[in-house]
Image (cartoon, rainbow, N blue to C red; front, side, top):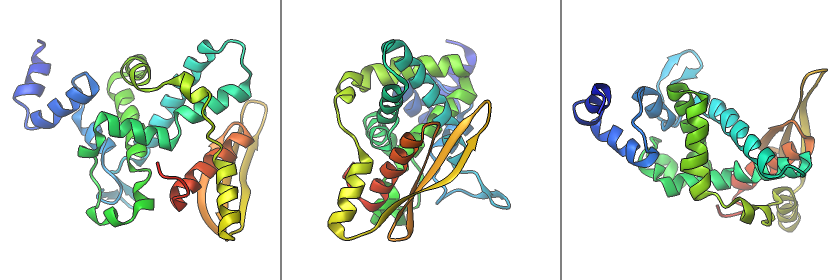
Length: 245
């Protein structure tokens, strides 16, 4: 056993935390600090400079991009004859907040996440805690071990044993339709509003927000307008507790 790994597991002041992570992840983290940050919600984070806290939000942003890249490559190879729309829909299902929440529970993230206990009574605020932490963890692994390691970790440790892609393929998860139906039943007005549309020779990104009775309930961003609307609708469903995840 390498000396550094031996020290981490048996001599470090964080040895209990590191062993717990190793049992979940299957490897010994090198930079424990970023893993702790990955599980730290903004409600308990400290301000390190004006407007910036040492929470998991920045890692979540990074992890979301890395996870999306790995899943996109996987689907591209799995479905060589499917079009962009199908691939985008499948990616959305795999990286959906509902699916990431479920994966986080399976992996035992509940015991690692730091957040303000007063949030327990606010279910709509808790809905994305686990999924956000999952994305932040991916960001932490990427910074600690690099892209190739993270890709292999996601494929062999997470997706292959825990994600049934073929079942997801036939599962209908049209959050936009569900949200619209719920609003109609509840007598509420729902509106999808384009925030930005960056379109040039090299890139095209859509940002869409959902307003329910004038209140912003979710924002979605994607390179496909319909996918951005679906992502926004999914976040709105979580926020409004339209569906139980």
